[in-house]
Image 1 (cartoon, one colour):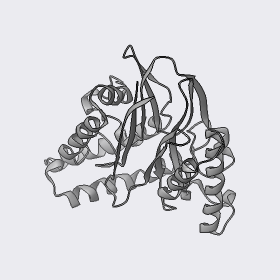
Image 2 (cartoon, one colour; image 1 turned 135 degrees about the vertical axis):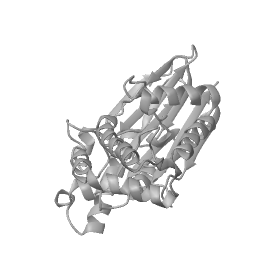
Image 3 (cartoon, one colour; image 1 turned 90 degrees about the vertical axis):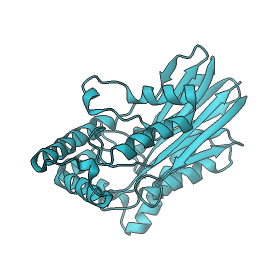
Image 4 (cartoon, helix red, strand yellow; image 1 turned 90 degrees about the horizontal axis):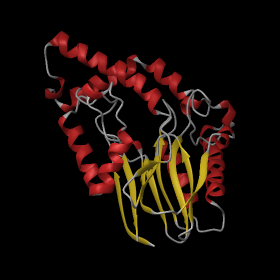
Length: 297
């Protein structure tokens, strides 16, 4: 049924990758997982690897049951590391992860589970694109990015310099300095996880189960399936921020037409040419990048 499979798994600006991926051929489960480190708290790879292990385990459990089991294991691990019940641990300090996971049932249907800003996107045989999941994190991130970008532009104007020409160490220090100035906003955004004002995320809590997005899609004329973490979302140029172009659709178009490696190359080239995040506003030079592209007969 699957004619080919391609995937990307690359580190971002950090030395270790907080993303994870799942290729469980026996249970026909595939997933892209994006770990998020707590602000001053636990590393995001704790959550992403626990969910990875749950989805990789060969069993008769459904996709939803495997995710629920992973969420419970994350709670137990978090409580062990913090020596506190999860309800006493701030959302800021928890290890969390976004998820886009599918389980194929022959050529009849696929099941999916989604959290946060990991995406499931389909292409049909007529080449039309369907973005199945929704990036609820983007609206919050956009607020922070807009403020940091304004501060960076002011820095360039005041000092009369091109920030992209600074040494890399200076650029990293400058980006961190600007993010530190909006720490309150970042904390507020983080506190909205698993609330109706924010987004669903896997954090070990019971609330996480209420914010799980899931469903079943009949396997009608599906040509390709794409699973992405947000590191593979195409960046928007500063001059295009008001046009509201769908960055996820741009990513999908490139991946479906030219392959997931081409998508990676285009994004990494943008990031290398714009290390100070001026031309393409964002909060870091490189994010972890994970994606799976399945092509069917």
